[in-house]
Length: 150
Image (cartoon, rainbow, N blue to C red; front, side, top):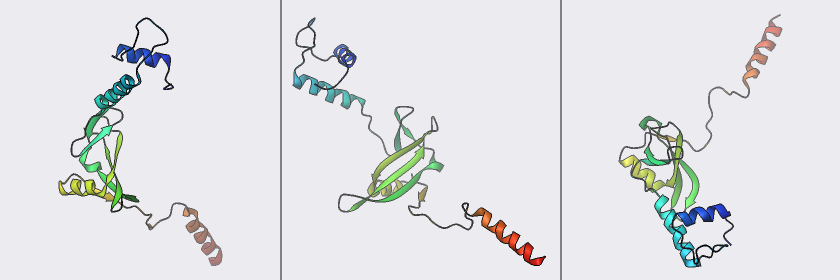
């Protein structure tokens, strides 16, 4: 009924899922027992983050970021009627992988207040002096100018 593989249910049984009758297949489990078992598994896997921490997907642990690589990006999405979404980015201090934390501007403000965030990333594209997409245009202009001189 849950759409899980038979092997998954066998592993759950070894981990403590209550089966109604031992030795009888298919396994029969009370609905409430399996709900409690799955909720307990989820609760055990959660690792609360402290201030300034990210969850590192490679280490599978809460980790701090390298201080010089902390960055906050304010998105235009709203979280409720009053707060904007922010993405706080960093690099794991142990394995060096990029980590992100999706939160509200309140958490970003709290991180700023405690001196954890170093810089802010702009959310819109800004112009720059040189454009990489039109790099050959200046060469064309130089070529045309040299033809005129001849």
